[in-house]
Image (tube, rainbow over all chains, first blue to last red; front, side):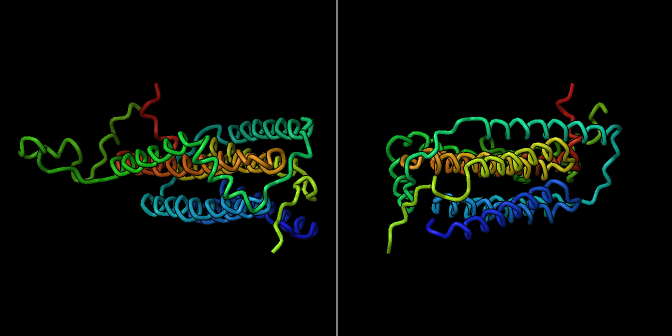
Length: 200
Length: 113
């Protein structure tokens, strides 16, 4: 984007701070509804970063798909399973958090080291800028055609799978013979099937 | 209207800044994935990690591969797969909630030996 370097720097700093604080809020806040809304903020700031990286089409796709679809889906799921439950205390939870924090810190240090010691071939070729959308279209219909078609099949499969997994009602009659299906096996008066059967 | 073909190497922000930002986001996502008790928050952590990977891809695409922007194409595919993953994951979560009456990750131990 053709914006002044100071403006670019300010935009980057603001977006980064929003991104990091939002991500920490998503992970750490006790109320999960706040986490979901902060996740929307994280997605929006990632879209802003894409705009700074000369990718207006992907930024628009990010806003449409992530903020418009995934985040709304997560909010609906929260509303559907929003039950206040007192989580049973687990022994060694603090130790587990410390250990996983150490592992994540080590991973972070490793990634930082890779980022700063690898000799990136900079400066690369000049960015295409606003022509990026045209280039993406050419890629999608020439050398990435097979993944593009597979993605459509994947979306159809996941749509059908999500419907099958999440629906509650069952057919009351058998499709072939036409007689009544024993629904008690499948779902009886909304009683959970596996609640008391687990070994522990 | 001037065509905006700015060489990204002339930009004031180094490539490493984006990489560090993505690393922070990824590690936050990993920590949340391990430590969340709520299953919905686990799915949100996965989305954070996917976004970190996308930031990396986009930064490399702009700084190192400015002509053939293959990173952007990959990001579009990742967004597609992430949408499918979120839909199926939340459907599985609803089904689990209906069967076990909880969203606590510690009580989803049906497959534990």
